[in-house]
Image 1 (cartoon, rainbow, N blue to C red):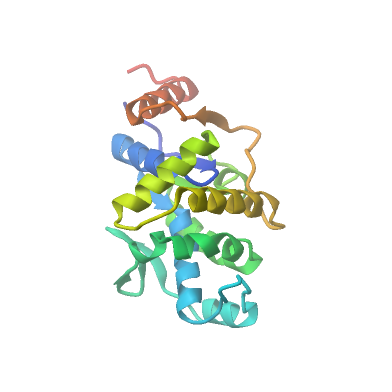
Image 2: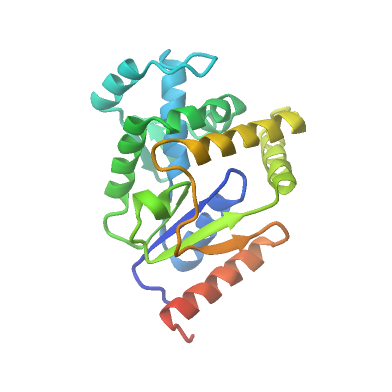
Length: 229
C-alpha cells in the first residue's frame, strides 16, 4: 500500500504503546520514525548528570537553559538517541529518568528546544512521530493524528514487563504511582498540556494485538486517502 508523504502524529499517555505503534507504522509503510519522548528523556539525563535537577525535582532552570542554549548535541542516530557520539538509549529508559522526565518536559524552554529538533527532523515529511503534544503543538497540521489510550492497569503491567525485560527489578505499585504522577503533570502543565486533538482518531489498544493495531491503522489510512490496494 502506497501512503502519501504525510506526517502521522501519535499522542497519548505513558505506556499506551505509542512508540511501538509508531515504529510498526514506520516499518510497514517506510516512514521515518521520530521518538519525541527520547529527546525529553535525553534532556532529563543530561540535567541529572550535570546537577541541573535535584532529587526532589527542583530544576535549576537558569543553568539548564544556558547549557541548552550553548548547543547541546542531542540527536537521533541510526540506532537510537545520542548526546554527541554517546548512545544513551539504555540510560534514558530507567525508572530514575522516568521519575523526573515530566517535570523537565513541563519547562517551556525545554519544550522549545525539543520542538526545534523535531521540526528539523520532520521538515521533509513522510514522518511518524509519537509524544504527548505532537498533534496539538508540534505538528498541528499533521495529515493524520492518532490518540492512543489503554486502561490504567494494562499500562502499568506493560511498563512493569518492559522494565523487567531490561534487567531491572521494578515494583508494580511504584510503576502505577509513577504513571499516575506523570499523567497528572503531563495533563496539567502550563505549556502544551497533553490532550486529544479535536481531529485525532482514538485507538483503545487495551485488548489489541500489535497485528490488530497495524491493521486498524492501515484501514484508517485507506479510508482517509481513498487507497484501494
